Image 1 (spheres, rainbow, N blue to C red):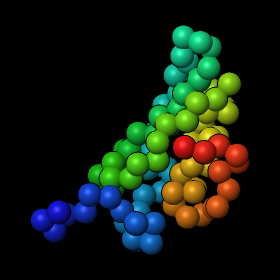
Image 2: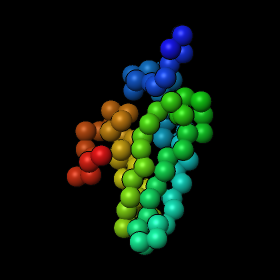
Image 3: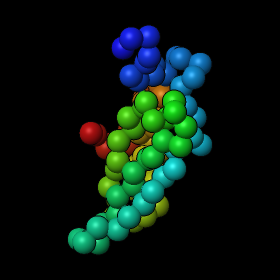
Length: 83
C-alpha cells in the first residue's frame, strides 16, 4: 500500500527467518499450552504465522515451527495440524 508491503511472500529476499520470531509460550487455564510467534524485526512483523496450541510447552512450540516452515514454503507438512 502506497509503496509499502503489508505482508511478504516467501520468495521475497526480506522474508524473515525463524530466528526473527520470539516464540512465547503460555499455559492456559485448561492446562494446555499455546505458542505465539512474535516478530522481532520489521519484516517478521509483516508475516502472520499464527499461534498454535499443544498439550505440552514443547508441542505448542513445535507446531508453530511447523507452521512457520509451511508459511515459508520450506515444507508442505503441517503434521496433521490444520488452521
